[in-house]
Length: 271
View 1 (cartoon, rainbow, N blue to C red):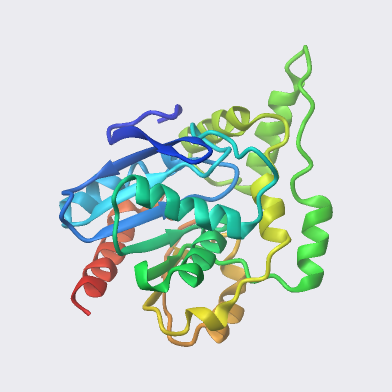
View 2: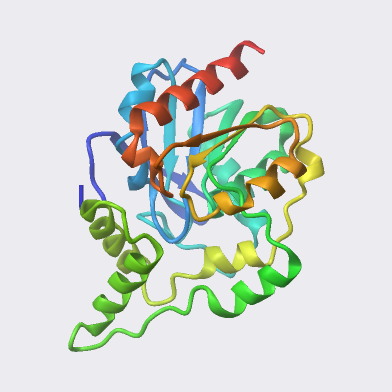
């Protein structure tokens, strides 16, 4: 799949800042997981795993973060608390009650803050790579991580985007890399607002102590290097590393990913 479509049911929800695009699978009365993607991608990254979650009795809803994918951009510069409030505004628009929040990278930081804001609505947390950066790391990444690109008449900016994706993920499938080019271009030359929100935010891990938590990511995920830091900060969390998986373990090993995620979501429904 190289575009932003797929086989899932897709729709738009009216939210305070415009329209939010989402894709969903599973029965409306099933235990629900709300999936928040990494920057600067979109909910399309979860297409391979959505039908597998439905087959395992889970309602899965993947939403495009404000300003990414096909969701309208926010009207101003947002912080992580703003993005978290937006996640709950989207949940309200769909009439969702308690949900398991799954977030990857930027999405993980948003999910952590959303859980802090509304623990009574958070049945559990799944972190697909939680970046617990030090202050020094956040400052350095704020300076250098997402420089953007300048559109050029000769198309050289396309090579720039492709090069960034290839440098970050040299081993991912060509179809995934192609889709990411589309996702980058759909955001525009400055794809960094979500990143900058993360680098300007410190996760309140203490606020998450009472919530069931699963750490689920590929063993080669870029944020897997932080596993020791994250497990020390969240000692109650269970860690499952998908062998051979990159940041896109949900695309590369969707059956294993769906097994782990569905079992966790079902466990929170019966807790």
